[in-house]
Image 1 (spheres, rainbow, N blue to C red):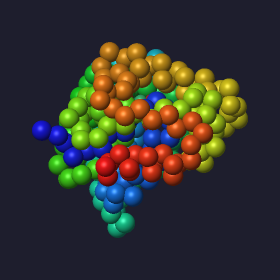
Image 2: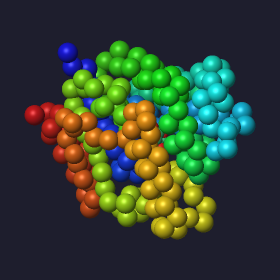
Image 3: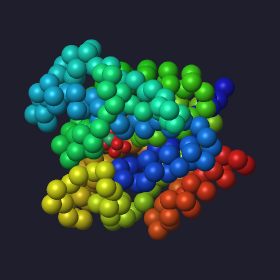
Length: 223
Ligand code: DC
């Protein structure tokens, strides 16, 4: 049996979110950004005093117990993430959240909590889901799987240019270093590490415009 999910995975700042949103729009189906879910848990944990020094399963357990994360459809038909009933905001894109999210995402209880919720979302029908382990762990039977990459330099340039992410005083070098550190933690963790599924289509987006990548994926889906 295949699941009617289009899985898009890849490292930080590989253009996944923009491409996933563009593809979903093109196909007129919903789009779920699972990185936002990890970021929301991280923000909730930070608000309860969790930092790099005490980022453990035990510290996260009470956070998960109380946190309510839902994707609800807005008037435009898009799924928007709500954290304890409120729409999530720019705080999820802060440098502080970005610095703590990979250690939080490496915790088995955090991943199990989200796995259940992400799988339940597919019950809503066909959708594009983007993250690090969608094609490998969440939906190993997804109908389409893509793994997006770009060179580290291109990814750092894109991240710096991204208006939503606020890196005060950041340089290309410091952004590249932060991205490399996140990739290192994401791909070496024990549970569901970042890696392409054996049957994923690998797409290197270096030097390509967003539209070109969306076209490429849309062609594969329509074929
Ligand atoms: O895509 P993003 O940069 O918003 O993701 C933030 C972090 O969340 C990323 O460093 C690793 C984690 N993540 C994950 O482990 N698994 C996913 N499916 C999505 C994100």
